[in-house]
Length: 213
Ligand SMILES: [Zn+2]
Ligand SMILES: [Zn+2]
Image (cartoon, rainbow, N blue to C red; front, top):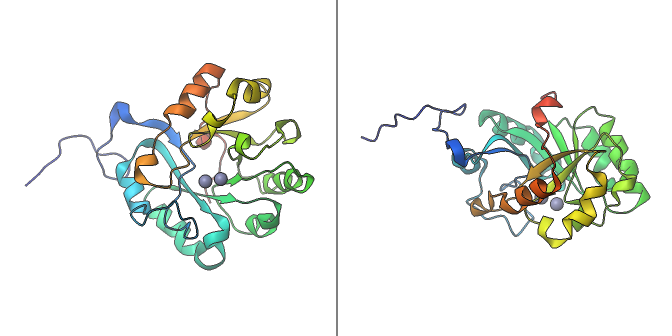
């Protein structure tokens, strides 16, 4: 019988040591059931088992599950020691999203007045609001409230001149680095961490700014 002498992590699984990222808060699973990029093997259990980051949060698309599976979602993440976040697609979803407690929100903030106002309403919950891949949505960071956390996202960061886009905002915001994984092999942050290193950005640990639900 196989026995493992490596010290068990918080979930009872062996830790990956130097392979671990400090955190990853933008991960999708099968709860994002209208997103064709998510594969059926991308279960919360598999993400927890792979354990690629020390702090891990799932952020499935709010519009895909919140109305029917909110309780099941939060309970399942809790049982796996995963933070329960969600990715909110703009102002239209904000009122409902503020009525359901999540550990944090990841927010699509397009360059519309209504979306910037939506960010303010999400912040009024007192929970962290992470501005999702702003370079991919043409978010004008000058209009984003100071209290938001800005994401450097492995799926999209390389699609822009990151020095030109992010550098003017380095001192105004806190930042997190994310994979935006939809499949197990996307649980990676190499491009995003390269960009953050070039920009001299230090990642904020979400546990320093959140109160778990
Ligand atoms: Zn997104
Ligand atoms: Zn996403």
